[in-house]
Amino acid sequence: MNTDLDSRVRTAAFHFLEAETRLVADKVLPHALLAKGFMFDGQRVPLLSPQGIFKPAVLPEMPLTIRTKYVEDGEAAPYHDVIGTDGLLRYCYRGTDPGHRDNVGLRLAMQRQVPLIYCHGVLAGRYVVEWPVFIVGDSPGELTFTVNMDEHRFALLGEVGANDSETDGRRRYITRQVQQRLHQEGFRQRVMAAYLAHCAVCRLRHEELLEAAHILPDGHPQGHPVIPNGLSLCKLHHAAFDANILRIRPDYEIEIRLDVLKEIDGPMLKHGLQEFHRGRLWTPHRPLHKPKPEFLEERYAMFRDAS
Image 1 (cartoon, helix red, strand yellow):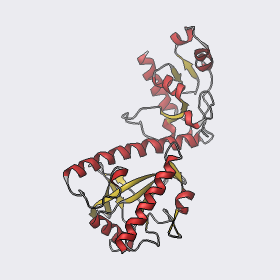
Image 2: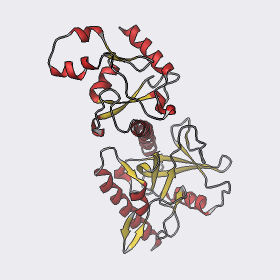
Image 3: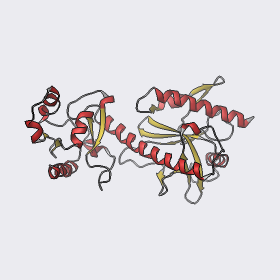
């Protein structure tokens, strides 16, 4: 009976999340929606609580959700959930007691290969939600569980194929993809918030047409996904920035490449690019969020070399 109830609640939770994420282009859900949850047999089932490991009252034994809280740049994280060298998530215990009921609940979920929901904070009060996730390892000495992820269509298979090599390989691949998506979406959300959802060049305010651009790219020693290494740009100006057509000086002055300035074309070239030559970049109000001049200087040198 308990197994049937557990399965029905998880199925209802997955259907709820599937419906809600279809309604938002960026797949990011607000804390209020997740904390409110959904109705199940006349009882409200929240998906979040102040605790990172959460078992709603309707479930008899095992948690439904694990959460990684968003931490501001420079703020100390209460828990250090990290990606291991194997590409899998290391999720911290609740506290330091392996026998805490939340840790015991996750251990039971691991033994039964029960699917859970993972809420990853990308901004204060905003979460990317992934499911199903599975506990696949337990390290009491390190006070962590190992977590991997799977495709939505495998959310209800439970133990079926959980230990075969095909399932393990698929889950590792999905986990790497999800982590990359969390990395990208977290960076985008932080940059959009800092720039108040404006293009830093043309001031366009339609967020669905905006992207978060790296000043120093991924792979560069300082190409970290932090706001001072980011710019909120519309799709046109992001593409022009990446193509070395639009350049930004360390003093925030915008330049358009000389050959493009000399071109004669239609109104898009004139009003979309040429008119911004020698204009000023629009930057966040908070000094800590402004583009770092040293990052812009290095990127400007890369542009100059490419030209």
